[in-house]
Length: 209
Image (cartoon, rainbow, N blue to C red; front, side, top):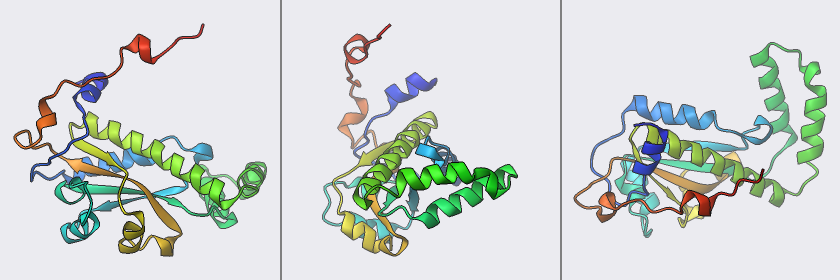
Protein backbone atom coordinates (compact mmCIF):
# COMPACT_ATOMS: atom_id res chain seq x y z
CA UNK A 1 0.00 0.00 0.00
CA UNK A 2 1.03 3.61 -0.47
CA UNK A 3 0.74 6.15 2.35
CA UNK A 4 -2.81 7.31 1.57
CA UNK A 5 -4.04 3.73 1.16
CA UNK A 6 -2.44 2.80 4.49
CA UNK A 7 -4.10 5.74 6.26
CA UNK A 8 -7.45 4.86 4.71
CA UNK A 9 -6.96 1.28 5.94
CA UNK A 10 -6.18 2.47 9.47
CA UNK A 11 -8.96 2.87 12.04
CA UNK A 12 -9.17 2.97 15.83
CA UNK A 13 -9.18 -0.78 16.42
CA UNK A 14 -11.62 -1.97 19.05
CA UNK A 15 -10.82 -5.70 19.25
CA UNK A 16 -7.38 -7.24 18.88
CA UNK A 17 -6.34 -10.76 17.96
CA UNK A 18 -3.67 -12.74 19.82
CA UNK A 19 -1.08 -12.02 17.11
CA UNK A 20 1.96 -10.15 18.43
CA UNK A 21 3.85 -7.31 16.80
CA UNK A 22 7.39 -8.42 15.98
CA UNK A 23 10.37 -6.84 17.71
CA UNK A 24 11.61 -5.57 14.34
CA UNK A 25 8.36 -3.80 13.51
CA UNK A 26 8.04 -2.44 17.03
CA UNK A 27 11.53 -0.97 16.80
CA UNK A 28 10.63 0.70 13.50
CA UNK A 29 7.66 2.41 15.14
CA UNK A 30 9.80 3.51 18.08
CA UNK A 31 12.49 4.83 15.73
CA UNK A 32 9.92 6.75 13.67
CA UNK A 33 8.42 8.27 16.81
CA UNK A 34 11.87 9.29 18.03
CA UNK A 35 12.41 11.08 14.69
CA UNK A 36 9.15 12.97 15.03
CA UNK A 37 9.04 16.75 14.79
CA UNK A 38 9.70 18.44 18.13
CA UNK A 39 9.91 22.12 19.04
CA UNK A 40 13.60 23.11 19.15
CA UNK A 41 14.35 19.39 19.02
CA UNK A 42 14.06 19.21 22.81
CA UNK A 43 11.69 16.19 22.96
CA UNK A 44 10.15 17.10 26.35
CA UNK A 45 8.43 13.72 26.70
CA UNK A 46 9.36 10.06 26.89
CA UNK A 47 7.90 6.89 25.43
CA UNK A 48 7.24 3.74 27.46
CA UNK A 49 6.50 0.42 25.76
CA UNK A 50 4.50 -1.91 27.99
CA UNK A 51 4.80 -5.55 26.94
CA UNK A 52 4.19 -7.22 30.29
CA UNK A 53 0.70 -8.71 30.23
CA UNK A 54 0.17 -8.64 33.99
CA UNK A 55 1.08 -4.96 34.11
CA UNK A 56 -1.18 -4.15 31.17
CA UNK A 57 -4.01 -5.97 32.92
CA UNK A 58 -3.50 -3.77 35.98
CA UNK A 59 -3.34 -0.62 33.85
CA UNK A 60 -6.58 -1.58 32.15
CA UNK A 61 -8.58 -2.50 35.26
CA UNK A 62 -11.78 -0.46 35.46
CA UNK A 63 -11.19 1.18 32.08
CA UNK A 64 -13.60 1.12 29.15
CA UNK A 65 -10.51 0.85 26.93
CA UNK A 66 -10.15 -2.93 26.73
CA UNK A 67 -7.36 -2.42 24.19
CA UNK A 68 -4.98 -1.53 27.04
CA UNK A 69 -4.85 -5.19 28.07
CA UNK A 70 -5.88 -6.93 24.85
CA UNK A 71 -3.45 -5.44 22.34
CA UNK A 72 0.04 -6.70 21.58
CA UNK A 73 1.84 -3.68 23.05
CA UNK A 74 0.86 -0.47 24.77
CA UNK A 75 2.79 2.74 24.14
CA UNK A 76 2.54 5.37 26.86
CA UNK A 77 3.53 8.94 26.04
CA UNK A 78 4.58 10.83 29.17
CA UNK A 79 5.45 14.53 29.28
CA UNK A 80 7.80 16.23 31.73
CA UNK A 81 5.89 18.05 34.45
CA UNK A 82 8.66 20.65 34.61
CA UNK A 83 11.35 21.72 32.16
CA UNK A 84 14.57 22.45 34.00
CA UNK A 85 17.89 24.03 33.16
CA UNK A 86 19.38 20.55 33.56
CA UNK A 87 17.17 19.29 30.71
CA UNK A 88 18.44 22.06 28.48
CA UNK A 89 22.06 21.56 29.57
CA UNK A 90 21.86 17.84 28.79
CA UNK A 91 20.29 18.56 25.41
CA UNK A 92 22.98 21.09 24.46
CA UNK A 93 25.74 18.67 25.45
CA UNK A 94 24.09 15.94 23.37
CA UNK A 95 23.92 18.17 20.28
CA UNK A 96 27.58 19.14 20.71
CA UNK A 97 28.58 15.49 21.00
CA UNK A 98 26.51 14.31 18.03
CA UNK A 99 27.61 17.12 15.72
CA UNK A 100 31.22 17.30 16.85
CA UNK A 101 30.90 20.88 18.04
CA UNK A 102 32.32 22.67 21.07
CA UNK A 103 29.60 23.39 23.62
CA UNK A 104 30.53 27.06 23.45
CA UNK A 105 29.38 27.19 19.82
CA UNK A 106 25.83 26.55 21.04
CA UNK A 107 25.81 29.32 23.64
CA UNK A 108 23.30 31.51 21.78
CA UNK A 109 20.97 28.58 21.15
CA UNK A 110 21.17 27.56 24.80
CA UNK A 111 20.40 31.12 25.92
CA UNK A 112 17.38 31.24 23.61
CA UNK A 113 16.05 27.99 25.08
CA UNK A 114 16.62 29.12 28.66
CA UNK A 115 15.00 32.51 28.08
CA UNK A 116 12.14 31.16 26.02
CA UNK A 117 11.25 28.14 28.15
CA UNK A 118 12.34 28.72 31.72
CA UNK A 119 10.60 32.10 31.91
CA UNK A 120 7.26 30.35 31.49
CA UNK A 121 5.31 28.69 34.30
CA UNK A 122 5.56 24.96 34.92
CA UNK A 123 1.90 24.64 33.94
CA UNK A 124 2.51 26.30 30.56
CA UNK A 125 5.57 24.15 29.95
CA UNK A 126 3.73 20.94 30.82
CA UNK A 127 0.96 21.83 28.38
CA UNK A 128 3.59 22.52 25.73
CA UNK A 129 5.35 19.23 26.49
CA UNK A 130 2.08 17.30 26.27
CA UNK A 131 1.38 18.81 22.86
CA UNK A 132 4.82 17.70 21.73
CA UNK A 133 3.93 14.18 22.86
CA UNK A 134 0.81 14.30 20.70
CA UNK A 135 2.96 15.12 17.68
CA UNK A 136 4.91 11.96 18.48
CA UNK A 137 1.63 10.06 18.76
CA UNK A 138 0.69 11.15 15.25
CA UNK A 139 3.99 9.91 13.89
CA UNK A 140 3.55 6.56 15.65
CA UNK A 141 0.06 6.19 14.16
CA UNK A 142 1.37 6.79 10.64
CA UNK A 143 4.36 4.49 11.14
CA UNK A 144 2.11 1.69 12.36
CA UNK A 145 -0.28 2.12 9.44
CA UNK A 146 2.64 2.04 7.00
CA UNK A 147 3.59 -1.36 8.47
CA UNK A 148 -0.03 -2.57 8.38
CA UNK A 149 -0.12 -2.72 12.16
CA UNK A 150 -3.36 -1.74 13.84
CA UNK A 151 -3.48 0.90 16.54
CA UNK A 152 -5.80 2.68 18.94
CA UNK A 153 -4.97 6.11 20.37
CA UNK A 154 -6.52 6.47 23.82
CA UNK A 155 -7.18 9.16 26.37
CA UNK A 156 -9.69 8.67 29.18
CA UNK A 157 -7.38 6.43 31.22
CA UNK A 158 -6.52 6.83 34.89
CA UNK A 159 -3.35 8.91 34.56
CA UNK A 160 -2.59 8.78 38.29
CA UNK A 161 -2.69 4.98 38.23
CA UNK A 162 -0.51 4.86 35.12
CA UNK A 163 1.99 7.23 36.69
CA UNK A 164 2.16 5.12 39.85
CA UNK A 165 2.42 1.71 38.17
CA UNK A 166 4.99 2.91 35.66
CA UNK A 167 6.97 4.88 38.27
CA UNK A 168 6.67 8.04 36.23
CA UNK A 169 6.50 10.49 39.13
CA UNK A 170 10.04 9.57 40.16
CA UNK A 171 11.17 10.51 36.65
CA UNK A 172 9.36 13.85 36.69
CA UNK A 173 6.90 12.62 34.05
CA UNK A 174 3.14 12.45 33.71
CA UNK A 175 1.28 10.19 31.26
CA UNK A 176 -0.76 12.14 28.70
CA UNK A 177 -1.86 9.72 25.95
CA UNK A 178 -1.51 6.05 25.03
CA UNK A 179 -1.41 3.98 21.85
CA UNK A 180 -2.33 0.31 21.62
CA UNK A 181 -0.62 -1.72 18.87
CA UNK A 182 -1.51 -5.10 17.43
CA UNK A 183 -3.66 -6.76 14.80
CA UNK A 184 -7.40 -6.46 14.40
CA UNK A 185 -9.77 -9.31 15.19
CA UNK A 186 -12.07 -8.97 12.18
CA UNK A 187 -14.58 -11.46 13.58
CA UNK A 188 -15.01 -9.62 16.88
CA UNK A 189 -14.55 -6.01 15.77
CA UNK A 190 -17.60 -4.81 13.88
CA UNK A 191 -15.77 -1.65 12.85
CA UNK A 192 -13.08 -3.56 10.95
CA UNK A 193 -15.16 -3.77 7.80
CA UNK A 194 -16.77 -0.34 7.95
CA UNK A 195 -15.95 2.20 5.26
CA UNK A 196 -13.79 4.99 6.63
CA UNK A 197 -15.70 8.28 6.71
CA UNK A 198 -14.01 11.67 6.55
CA UNK A 199 -14.95 15.08 5.20
CA UNK A 200 -14.59 15.73 1.51
CA UNK A 201 -11.20 17.31 0.86
CA UNK A 202 -12.73 20.62 -0.26
CA UNK A 203 -14.82 20.80 2.94
CA UNK A 204 -11.82 20.02 5.10
CA UNK A 205 -9.05 22.08 3.54
CA UNK A 206 -9.04 25.58 2.07
CA UNK A 207 -6.23 26.75 -0.19
CA UNK A 208 -5.45 30.42 0.30
CA UNK A 209 -3.50 31.65 -2.72
